[in-house]
Amino acid sequence: MRTRRQHRLWLAGGAILLVAAACETAVTPQQQAARRASSWPPPNDRRVVLLAIDGPRYSETFGDPLHEHVPGMWDTLRPMGTLCSNFKNLGITNTNPGHGTVLTGAWQYIDNEGVTRVPYPTLFEYYRKVSGTAASDAVLIAGKLKFNALTYSTHPDYGAAYGASSYLDIPYDLETYDRLIQQLDQNSPHLVMCSFSDVDQAGHSGVWSDYLRAIEVVDSLIVLTWNHLQADPDYAGKTYMFVTADHGRHDDAHGGFQSHGDSCDGCQHIPFLVLGPNIRQGHEVTSLYTQRDICLTVGQILGIPTPYSAGLLMQPIFEQPTGVLH
Image 1 (cartoon, rainbow, N blue to C red):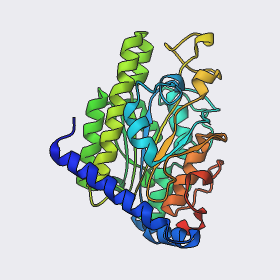
Image 2: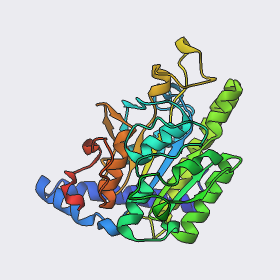
Image 3: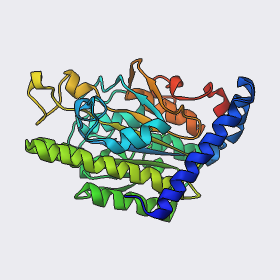
Image 4: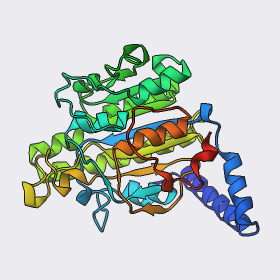
C-alpha cells in the first residue's frame, strides 16, 4: 500500500507525464527526437544494472496471460520500458554458462560448477580496461559461490587486473537485494550484475508453490531496485536496468519445472525487460534476440568496445538509432 507521500509523488509524476505528452504533440517528430537525445546522459555518466533471475520459466513470468506472479514487473515496470517476448538462451541452459554468455556476448560451454573461467572477456573487464576505474566500480553479486568463475576471464589481454569485485554465496534473495542496495549506496558502481538464486533453488525442490512464491518475491525486489535507482541522484535518469534470466526450466512435455538443461522451449525461452533514459516505453519486441546480444548492447550504452562479443545490437529497444549514444 502506498503511503500518502508516495501517492502524492505518483500523482505528481503522472501529471508531469501528461503535461510532457501534451507538449510533445505540439512539435515535429524531428524536434521530439532532438529533445529526447539532448536529455540522454553522456557515455561516461551512464550506468547499467543487470538483474538476472536464476531459472524462471517464461510460462510463469511474462508468458502467463494473467501475469499473476510478476505483477510488479508487468504492471509497474513494463509500461516504462521494452519487453522482448522472444528472448532465448540458445546455448547451454545452466547457470554458469547462461550468466557467462550474458557477460561475454559469446556462447559459453564451460562447466556449471565454477571450476572453469570464461575464455572471453566479460563486461567487467571491457569496462574497467577502458574506464581505468577501481574494481568497486564493476560489481558482481550472486547467491551462488560458483559465480567466482565469472568475475574475470582467462583472456591474455584482460584477466584479473580488470575483474569485478564480488559478493557471493548469499543465502537468500532478500539478503542478495540488501547487498545490492548496500553497494549502490556505498560505492555507486557504474556496472553491476546481480543474480537472484531462490527461484532456481525452489524449482529444484520440486515444490510448485515454493517455486511460484520465489518468483513473486524476486518480482517485488526488482521493482524495489528500480525505485531505489530512481530515488538516488547518482542513478536517476542515468541508469539502464536489464532484467533477464540465465535459463528457464523444462516444459511439461520434457520433464516439468523441477529441472533444466536441455533445448526444450521451457529451458530456452526466458524473460527480458529493459528500462532506461532512451529505452522505448510500453514497447514489445517480437523478433528473436538471445543472451549473446546483451553484452554488445551494454557496451554501446557505456561507450566501450566489446570486440570478442558475437551478439547483435538490440536496436529496437532504443527510441532512436544508437549512433547518438556515442
